[in-house]
Amino acid sequence: MARCDKVIGVPFTAPPRTAAWAHQDARTGFEVVEFRPVGDGLVVTGCTTAVEGGRAWIVDYTVRLDAGWRTRSAEVHGRSDAGASSLFLEADGAGHWQVGGALAPYLDGCLDVDLESSAMTNALPVHRMALESRDRAAAPAAYVRAVGLDVERLEQTYARTDDDGARQRYDYAAPAFDFSCQLVYDAAGLVLAYPGIAVRAG
Image 1 (tube, rainbow, N blue to C red):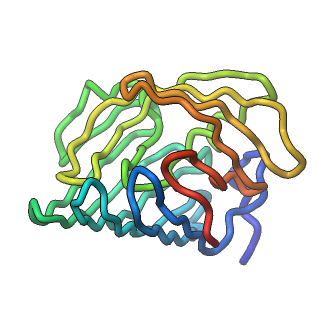
Image 2: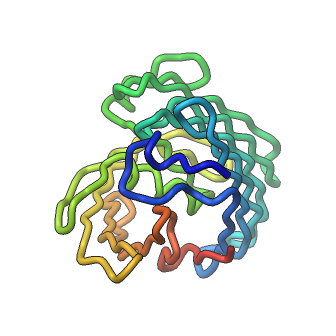
């Protein structure tokens, strides 16, 4: 696979062709993702199957990123005991969104999609912001629930701590969920360890 890190302009190596995560603790499941360079951006296609709180669900997604790793669109399909649902998000890369073709001003200022079902989407703000060591930044996101695919605005922050060899570490916080942890990323900027959620499996 051709390198795309210089095209995308981030301090990481090119993402692998595929990656996988075992979801654990909060849920039990598995996620597999494919990364495909398209033009000067990237298309990420993935699927998570899981059981959470006794409820089984499947979420398939395709996220299109521009050269700066800003989300430009996300197509999401979900299935659970609540039925099947589909969602299409579109963004202009400047913080304006449409949800199902309708303007969504409550998402103004968001540059990333964050799927509740995915460990992959935590790579998006880290690539996009390219924080220096000990820098902190807000990264509000269009947050898509796993069951029903409802879309919310999620306020969150990332703070890069001291690196550990080829690994980068970020203190992550999402106050709405009263949740914080340290995320560990590999040289390609993909999560290796997401405490309480997932670990890299391949």
